Length: 399
Picture 1: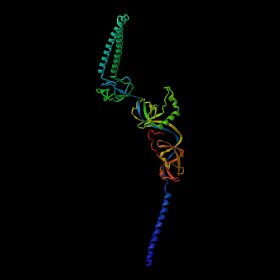
Picture 2: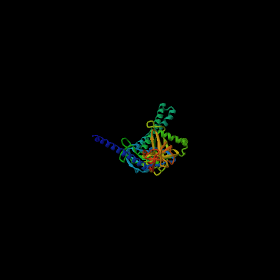
Picture 3: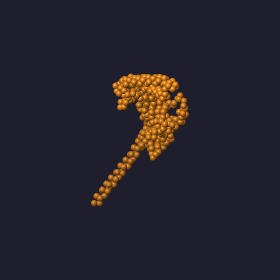
Picture 4: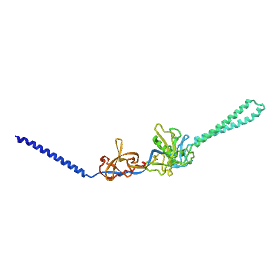
């Protein structure tokens, strides 16, 4: 009986020793694998040391140097359109004609009234010429003389009123022939021949004529951006030029126009107009810039961005934004030295430029920084490196 009781205890001890042996072997095996594993591969980039231009980009829309609405200034039926829509016309070209018959009749009536008024004036002048000598001889009463003088004055006033009516009728008749007030591009007509125009709800504005060389861009900037641009403007000495009354003074042409497809307009432009105050409702300041458009490629109403250079940071280190991580309010960058060892540096950030960021302190040009694999590395770790291939910079983003 005693022998049978010891046997389960012995088996249990053998089982425990076997487990401990297997566990020890496993730990030794794991350590051997870790020591022999290849270094972690990370993607790295080399910090550039260069001058960094800083820009402000403003979103706006194009408009003509002059956008003139073509209005029907008299009521009537539209008789003809004398132009091709979407083409350029010259100042003085005939654009529309309105039925002129009612205005011709009005002119004839005014001319008839003028003729009658002149006839009355001639008679009143003749009467006064006869009565005045008689009044001097006391052959007629002073009252008769006063009446003749008053009749002559009234006849003269009636003539002047009739002449004004004739002038007005001639002006209204001239409005039936609508001429181009400027050289420019004319759009699609809002009325067709046969329509009654010149009175709501019928069309009053028939078309728009735009002078598009040069073309303007109207845009708004925040109060902060205004302060940046104003300080730059004053620091460059342009404020003195602005206050100079000499209209021949050439305006600075240092703005770049970016189009909707990301391309840059061939010609640079400059500020030509500005608001007198900040809009308190929106907190923005409105500006207009002018750009040469000799090929007339740009049209009013296009989306556009205006880029303005306001500062150049000289000799600064620049790295991809992805290389920067944050921990408890501190910004860090992992650097790989010549032996492949990782170290971490606390850096001071500057402005972003495209996909890159300026480093004011902590990184120098030529340093190798880790861009991808930041979560897996630790200071002192050995790594292998492969160059990081950055994405192409977004169109129009400064840098």
